[in-house]
Amino acid sequence: MKTWALFVVVLSSVAFADSQQPQPSKQQPPSNPGYSGHGANSVSEKEIAKYLAPQLPDTVARRIQTMLDVRGAGGGIMTAKGDRMVFNTRITGTSQIWRQDGPMKFAIQLTGGEDRTAAVDITPDDRWIVVSRDVGGQENPGLYLMPIEGGQLKLVQHAPKVQSSLQYVSDDSKWLYFRANDIAEDSYAIYRYDINAGKKELVFDQKGLWSIADRKGDQWLMYKQLGSAQVEIYSYDLKSKQLTPVLGQNELEEYEVQFGAKPGQVLVKTNKPSDFRRVYSFERGKLTPITPELKYDVDEFSIDDARQRIYYRINEGGYSKLAVL
Image (cartoon, rainbow, N blue to C red; front, side, top):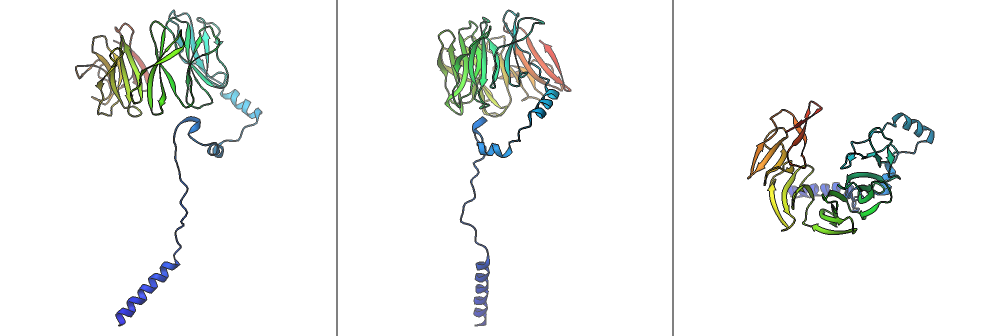
């Protein structure tokens, strides 16, 4: 009996102690949706207002801008004749397009306003500047054409919540190829735009984050983005619509590719076989080194239009050096 009495007392004490504990709130914690999307749609106006710095008085802002107002320009894009150059600069406070009509000539401003605008190419016939413009910092740029003499922008494609970016202009200046995620938000399709007729047509719409790495005749080398640097490489035949795996399938490696001089040859920049990035020739499934073995990365490489010379740049102790093969 004493044992049972003790057991009852213990149970009663536990029950009493439990009744004194604060009960958890039935109210659910506020949901945290986290970051999604990009640009203006990625955060709410209320969230932006929480961290927005107060506006400086005009007198203070002008003094700071005067001290820091040193803005340069990029290398620019030359015309096919080599007599003119267009370039982008933020000298007005926002990236805009300027043109220079020869050495030591005064630059002429071609675009203005508050929206970031950039020249991304010139058509081979030197008639048009291909323009990328992002409205209101939305990170959904559109594509336009502008006469090289200046004037009104001609719309190629600019749609809400769609990123449109140039891939290349055909050698005869008739077609402008671009990619856009207008079919699916997480996939890029490839279009071509008839510059004279002002019409676009779909060329490639397979699912994935696709871009064109290089072209040769009716063949494309294409990247399928897997991560920030990891890609798969495919070849695409424009006539047969055949997509063929080339390199990087079932891997997570960095590759940068261009067509080589020989049929079936692909030039590849990668760090897969070694600790440093080198340029290789990829033929019949085998990587063969082209650039010498160095304890430095090859930062960039390209092959000329005639497929005769390979140019590459190395990063040696923070300094860039150019070499030609």
